[in-house]
Figure 1: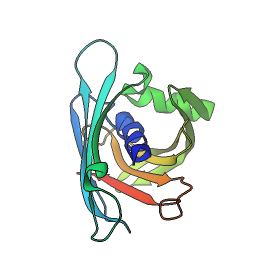
Figure 2 (figure 1 turned 180 degrees about the vertical axis):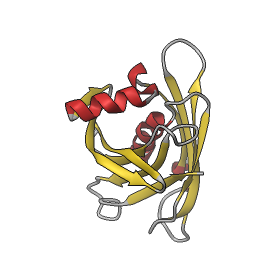
Figure 3 (figure 1 turned 90 degrees about the vertical axis):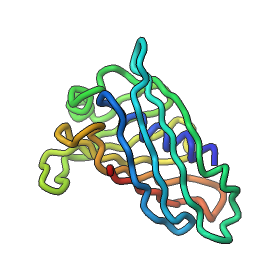
Figure 4 (figure 1 turned 135 degrees about the vertical axis):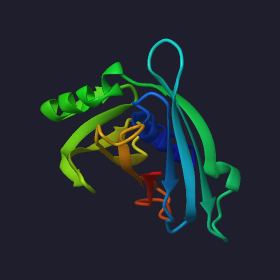
Length: 167
């Protein structure tokens, strides 16, 4: 579950690129009923982001409930505070940031919004693959949808998907 915390931290830290906080609803999955997450930019020098989350597990899932919630803080490049980072990522195709590699996948449409950015975040720990949809007009963080696909030696968790939507 520590890999879950790191993966969700990387996803939601990128989601907090706008000032303030963003709240997410975690959709139901095979092993969990849903949940919630919150991302906020921490005041101070640099660009520090704090993420907290809580998943609600389904009955008979052999994972302690306290392992399904947590909080983490991470520092991101200032460039990703707004669309500039995504435009640069689109031009380069991939970019390294501390503890992860970012990849531009394609431009996408999301609801009434066109020209959203679909990106992949590949954490260095190799425990997950993250897909995120960013659009600069989306209120708050700008991330409308996020998927975390877990990579694990445990068959129950390998390929497991947790999907989050902006509230």
